[in-house]
Image (cartoon, rainbow, N blue to C red; front, side):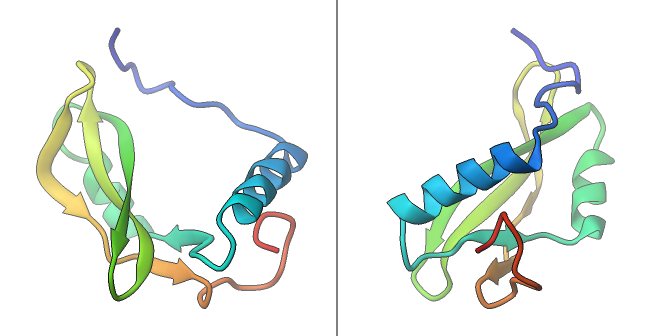
Amino acid sequence: MSFNGTEGSPITLAQGKTLTANYRRACPNTTKGVFIGMDHINDLLAQTGAKGIRVYFGNDSVTGNTVVMVAADGSENDILDLIIDCGKPSPPNSGSANDLNS
């Protein structure tokens, strides 16, 4: 297989609500999400050969659950020149309550 940049698909708010509610039930009292700024996302995608972003789940003893993000190329390989972490966890950085975060 190979990546072509079209992987993934849009889902409805109802589908997203179900998925995030399932996660919150399975993993109560933990990080619900992580915000990564667009500058870092753009930097990942601007790397030569990047077809998208791979998100790894991680855990930090200080901040709890987090994500580690790298670009991936068309051969499904991680591009390890730039690795992004240190996003803003939700909670407490959750914004207004909505169907995905509450």
